[in-house]
Length: 81
Image (cartoon, rainbow, N blue to C red; front, side, top):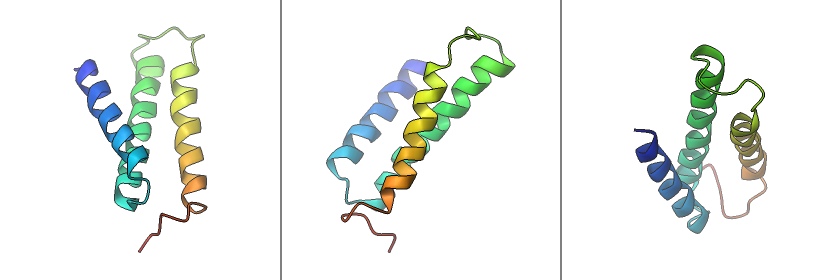
């Protein structure tokens, strides 16, 4: 299941990078990072399946999500309307 999610989210992210002017696709890409952050948080904090010292997966997902949110307003190709 996790492999299927990884493949699907990578397709969305690559397509979003190629079609950066599509605002709906940009938001969908941001959602994939949000889902990833929630998944890794659950794995680490609830199920204790991840090493407590390892924070990289959560950090990458959260930082990328925040960065995309900030940069969305600066991109000339993206408009909310």
